[in-house]
Structure formats: C-alpha cells, structure tokens
Image (cartoon, rainbow, N blue to C red; front, side, top):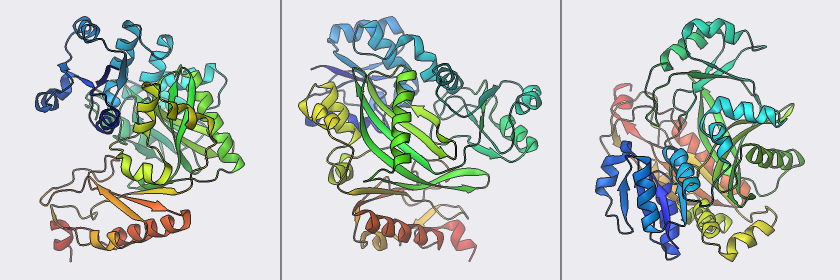
Length: 414
C-alpha cells in the first residue's frame, strides 16, 4: 500500500516508524515551514516540498497514494484537502473550518446540541470589553485560535489581565507558523482534565488511551506536569468518553487520529479542544505497547492498512491491564543553561521506570519551560496504577526540590 504523510515531524515520526514496521515506506510531503527537515530527509519512499496545491496533488496521484495522513498539527488541513481531492478516505469537507479553527469548532458543537465552553474571538483590542461582557464570570482563558503546545495560553483573573494577554498575542507569529490575526477567549472550565486519544476509520472511533492529566497553574498559565492512563473508568468517565465520541461526529471526523482535551466539570464533560492528529510531541511505541498492547501510531497504521488488529481492538472494551505514566520534566525556575542532570539516575532506579524521551543537551537554555513541547525531556513509567502514581510523585518531588537538573541559574541562586 502507498501512504503519504504530510509534515512527518513531531509524533508523525513515530507513525512513519509504525508503517515501516508493517512493510510500508511512506512518501513524505513537507510544508514550506519544514524546508530544512525536507532537505535532510533521505526520502527513501519519496519526498516533496509543497508549494502549489495542484502540483502536490498531481505528484501524489502519479505516486499512486492510497492514503494521505496528517503527521503533525501543521499538516492537518493540507492532508484533508489532498485526501478529498484525490478521492481517498477523508473527513467531512463541509466541516473543515470547524477542524481548523477553535471558534468554529465551538460553533459546530453548539449546532449539534453538544454542551461546550463559551467561546468568543477578538481581533482588535477595542473589542475586549464587549467580548468579556458576554462571559458570566472570571477567570477566562486566552489562547491563539490555531496553535499547539500551550503556546500563548493564559488564565486571566480580570479584564486587565485578559487585555494584556490578548495584546501580547495579537499580531504575533505562533508555534504553527501563522500570525495571530484573532485571539480566542474561552470560559474557564473547573474540574479534572482528561486526554481522550482515538483513531477513526470509516466513522468508527477506537479508543487508544484515556489519560488523567495533572495540570497546575504557574504564573497565570496552566502547566502540564504529567498524565497517566486509566485502567478502569468510573460512570462519569465513561460519560466523558461518549461525549468525546459525539464531538468527533459533530466535527465530521471519519478517518485518522484525534487528540481531545476534556474537563469533567460539575455540569458534565466539556471539550477544551480537539487536535486532529496524534498527541505530540513524540509518541514512542515502546512504552505504549508495553503498557497497553498498542500505541496511537501502531493502531493508526493498522487501521490504514486494513489489518485485523484494528477491528479486534475496536471490538474490545477499554480495559488496559497496565498503567502508562508520563512526567514532563522541567528545569529549575531560575533558568539558565543546563550544566548537569543528576536526577536521571534517581528516576532510573524507580521500579516502574521505562524510558526517557527528548533529554536536553548540556548547554541548552530552555526558552519557555511552560510549553508542553517536552523541551526539558520526559519520563515514561509502566506498571500497576498505584506503583506508577507513586513513582511519578517521586519524580515531581525531585523536580520541585531542584534535584533533577543543574543550570547556571540554579547555581547562581545558591
């Protein structure tokens, strides 16, 4: 089978690996923002730097593509457009704006009668008072309409904070390379946060993982400390899963991976946002398969290739035997360049430790430790739920005590 990946960066690298393990060398399409990775890519299965839509469509038609997949956030829109133009499996074209723009996403859910957070947009600072007047109370959440990695995300306690946060975002280039011509203002949702990850094929939605996230607020920003999968779902959590699947239907999702962030509020589950690709920034299959028997990448590859493993997974209830935990490691708040990583061996000795990803290089100065791009590295844990939770707490304590990393800033502050 011939498969094309659009922007195979971030967790798309892991999707490419899963396809290769199944005997498929994918064709890589890169947007202009990824000219460097495109040039460095050996392009064993073929590669293309996208410039004009018709030319890219013709190239994939000549290649004989049988599936075009979004391999990262920046590839979502183009992959869907190419799939539709080539007559390949794709999501509902009429709902493409709802999958590309968080404001339109909220409006699509409202039209479908699905409860969601009140969402408005601002394109000029003069609009701020009237837009904030539509909200019943503070705090509100301010964020770009199309970005990733918690880029620009702020929780604002009053109008002054909201005005400042919006002003800092308008006109700025965001993490996915577009200019923030408007900014989203959203109702703050109180309650535990979950990640619902799925793979869809012909409108059938398979559950990859249900994660419970640990989110704290630092400097007025929500900060992800980590997350772990749930082995057993409560009645409220089962309702949350069903709610998420209804959201996918309302947004026209029929094919591909989705990553949903949902809060379980006192009024029931409420969507924060949906990303129509695998969770990022990396999803190595080893810890996932060890804990769950599959990863998003392996499940998606099986779905695209029509393998029985996907149908078998779809038929089984969601009851993982082990828990997968992940801690996003962060440098000391004092900042500075990285000098040493003395805490890594302490983590390696923990009973459920599995592996690290994206460990930083010595000398690196992490620009924004509040992003969810795992610039400071991450640790995976696999085992029984209570044991994984214990080892995650130990890792957080090492970080809180400043024993994980040594930086020039932490040395200077002593």
